Image 1 (cartoon, rainbow, N blue to C red):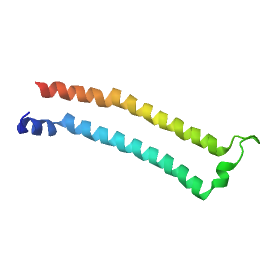
Image 2: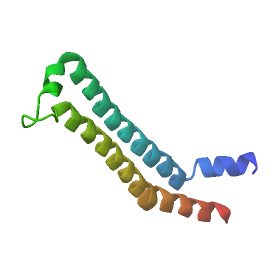
Image 3: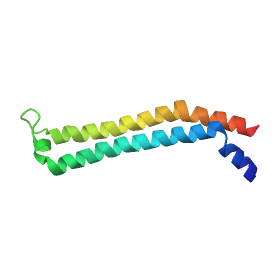
Image 4: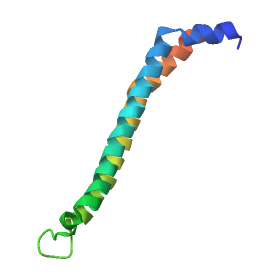
Length: 102
């Protein structure tokens, strides 16, 4: 590719939209996971007794439930990412490739 073609793609409105959507998706999911994880770490640091409480008098504690919830949230965020990438990012990428191939 010539520098002129690269510049034409870089200034294309669909490319700009693609970059913005990807960045918004990446940063929002990263921020969500960081908040979840560091919220858990802060809970462990400042209120360990909360996580050690039994749920119903048995051996299962609140901390175990919270840990499972964090893993499930990570899977849910991954699923959301895949959904958005397949239904928003990839079609826009294909459209851009079609227009720039002409």
